[in-house]
Length: 153
Image (cartoon, rainbow, N blue to C red; front, top):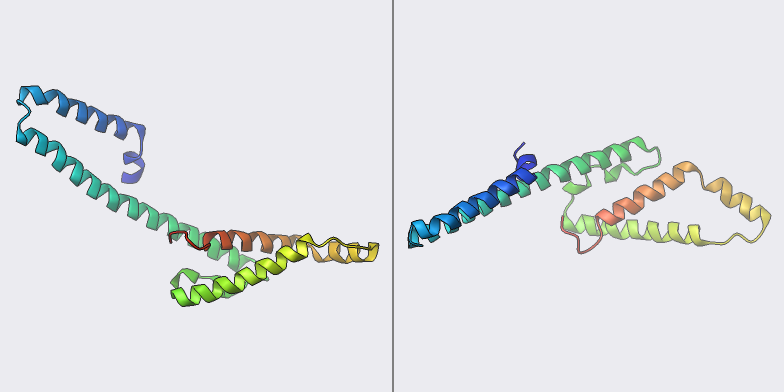
């Protein structure tokens, strides 16, 4: 895979060696205009191709993360299936969904920070906090971190 090789130490070393060879050839070519244009053109083309490669890799990673999240939502009994394929929603729909999730998160946080007063209340809260609700809370926090404002999609 190109992204694996181009991100390796060997690719960095090869690029460094290429620059050293170019610099060493300068005096031999009398530091001509063509000599300067070669490195400028080469780096411009390499930059363009690397941007495309990075975007392709980012798209693949985003797709894999979305598929993993979809599987987590599908596997959880109490999960809302509306969250599956959420990346296909419009920005307005995502804003509405985010507001709903923030309300759920605030409610969940408030429940977690309450201090039970009596033994009966402690028993009540202990019985309500099953492993499944903790898993849902964790999944919700991860989901909200992914959709937090200011984060690039």
